Length: 404
Image (tube, rainbow, N blue to C red; front, side, top):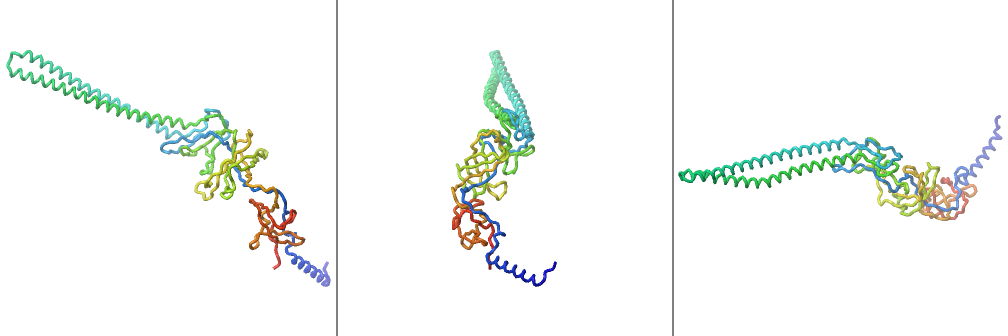
């Protein structure tokens, strides 16, 4: 059905009038979402997430070596496995340490062989000298007997025999002195050989002890928890190569539990030891417990190697001994920084900057009216505001448009 021109023109005129009336009141309240200003307690908090862990744990780590040799994991008990004392939890690759043991054993065998050879040489040298001295003594005794028999023969022959006797006696003295001298020399040589044997024995013992440390057993009964490495960005697993002294796993004491959190530097400035925290464990039917901050790190650390992002470590200790709170469970932690019993609370989206003032836009009839406010307190999402306001006022969540 077509409208006649006489009916269309009055309709257009009415629409134009309504449009002008709407413009005179600013933006229509129906087009801007609002928030109902409420009077209620206000809490400033820092929220973070982190896994449960035991405050006290038996640390299981790679053995420390003098040469800082890296060692590969060839066996790692599954996380969460219940182990008894002396059960094997970790096995490390023994290949290079076995080579050390074989080399040390070979060095010891060589040192012992050299010692036996040296002892045979020293014994032979002494026996030869002792035999020479016995021979010289015998020759001197024979010369002495011959000299006694030649008492009545020619003086020249007697003199020759006497000289031979003196020569043999002098030889006995020289050999005797030499035997006395080599006794000290041989003692030093034997000591030197024994030092080599002791060194080789010590190296063999060290190599055998190092091999024993590659099998890491549970010092107590407990539950295996793999240690998360921030620098690697993951927990260890079989095949990983570890540095000496690097933590692989823990056997926690479940009587005292805590949460280790990472928060930004600005948030950390609000936190201090002793502040109350509320902990939620969603996987246990949203179990809620309380706790307190036990430590705040003095310096921020990179979240991982070569990262420019730094965070501060916070430790919160739980006020509970629940048996179902086990290491590794994810938690949401709500740390109470400050509390205000009452205040007009509004989301930060309702607060706008107008020149040098902070304002909120309050719905009054068919328009929004700007009103200056001051902030008494605020957290990441809400603020306590003060001004010409009352609870129940409708505040604009977007900046209303105004007439040019």
